[in-house]
Image 1 (cartoon, helix red, strand yellow):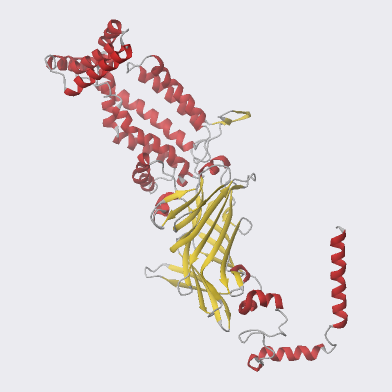
Image 2 (cartoon, one colour):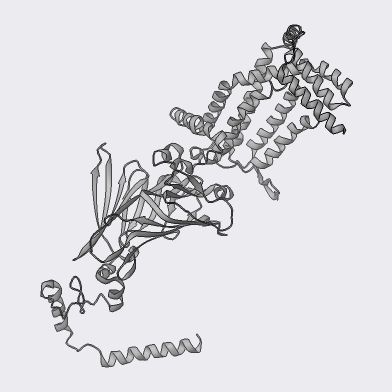
Length: 601
């Protein structure tokens, strides 16, 4: 303590001492207590000289001081009380709400556990703060300073579903504040309404300002993946979905237009607010702390418009399950990242519904993945068959292609021209084997987005994998390999080996040579590094997919032999012997000649 602080403390003590000597109450304490008691029992007997306000309290009220009255005005009496913790719950969630400020202090999701199998607290009063502020004639009023009186009732809606309603009221003689929380059975949504009843001239603002900051509690074992998938999402009134990126640094944005909802999402779970009308003046911020118990720190400030002293919104506290989110409000299902537009349709309309259907019959998600692989491969079998036939045709005409290489190997343009003539004469398309494979790519890439975000796989075991939503650890390494990690995922190894074998088998069917042939062996090794820390379910899917592809090609080979394909090629050759070049072929040849001439110049 420095000299100035010591001096101030001494002066403060001196003031208290002087006050206690010269301004202390008379010793007739019992008489004063009786008089005060009579005043409380008969508020009608107050005179104007005794009253600080014609509405509420007196100078003799020992619970209120001048500073409190100056700050809160007619609401000063509601800032004194005893805090109660109130429970609102259904079969899915449990909420703890404080009578002080009507604040949501804790949310527990009953059907889920954290990574260490403890009750899953989506947030609590230590990790999350919500401040609702409204302008009054005495200045900004934080509703957290107001004590409410609770009442609980159970009702039913038109569909016969039970609803638990918590009503919190802060009342004085000239008005009341009412907050209502309504929780329907089998729902993750909590309706919240706010009403100012009377209080004419007390509140000067036409909006409630919210400041919400949440340190997202770590719920998964794989913190790096959780941070990669964490997003602060929002949806504008005009129907546009957007979010802050997934970088580790500080990110902030002021949203130009009103929004419908804002969501703090961390891979499998979200805490969100959905407006009855709109949220205005929205600013959002997120950052990544060093603390490993926190996934991200997310914050938003926004305004909730008041209409005739009333407003409302809906909380969503629950899982990021696509079909569940889709029922909440427009665009809310976008909290689950289903991938880019050219692959998201596979997940949204096929994979999600397949999972939901198969869950009714199987409770083992490893089996469900196997069945989904078989169903997809069966649906895509015609494309696989065409791809195989296309590659087989290229293989049987390889002697003719080799002759052209020997003859025109030093002239690439002439070589390409002669190849095009050969393909036209034999009725073979060089892309006939590749195009069907390209058409299957959306299904392959869709899984890359689906499995990391599939809450259905969370904490579901299969074989040696204890949790299909994270990597399976077959061996823990005593060191870290750059870009790989400090563990070995067996499913990823199996996928890599199967892909290399598939590449070797596939190269026997094609005419690929040189770098293109070697690339097929490099890619599986690259993916081994990438997928080692990805969900085991994803690597298992790719492994099973490779094995089924082996089976399909072996089956096709039983019914398709090279002699029959060669016979068809010869038949096409005879048919196209006197066939004129198409306009496209002629233009292509002319373009190639022009390019060659330009190159020589």
